[in-house]
Image (tube, rainbow, N blue to C red; front, side):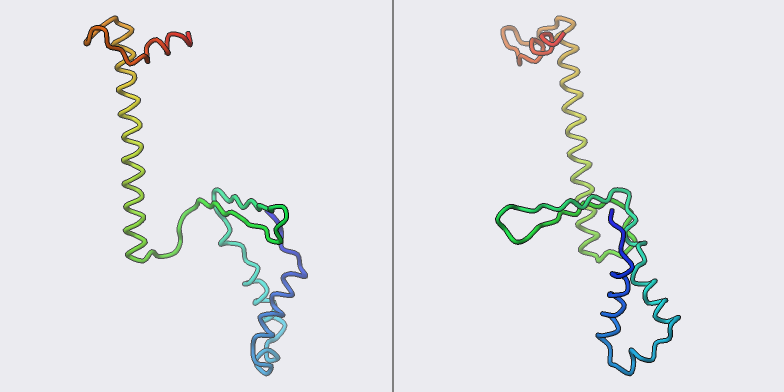
Length: 136
């Protein structure tokens, strides 16, 4: 993760002050400007458990693209629509994980049945047992 340089911090404060009316910007004391600089450069919002920000520069294009993947605690309030989407995604993830667990359970039961030599349907095989035995 890159650190913000002092010159960048000062330029952000200058940019903020230049967007104000001149008398208002001139009325700031040194301590107030220092407080502005501190509040602009605070990195509390960047503290995530997983913070992956790779940049992709494509050849022959003047632009570069970045991808952000963050995982952390959401500290902001959610709108009702966002809350519904989050709940729906949670249910979808639980459903997919449940399907994977049930599928693995059935494959294990099938392998155990085949290991014991139980043949429920004569002359019919899924081929999983033969493939499994070829690894050992």
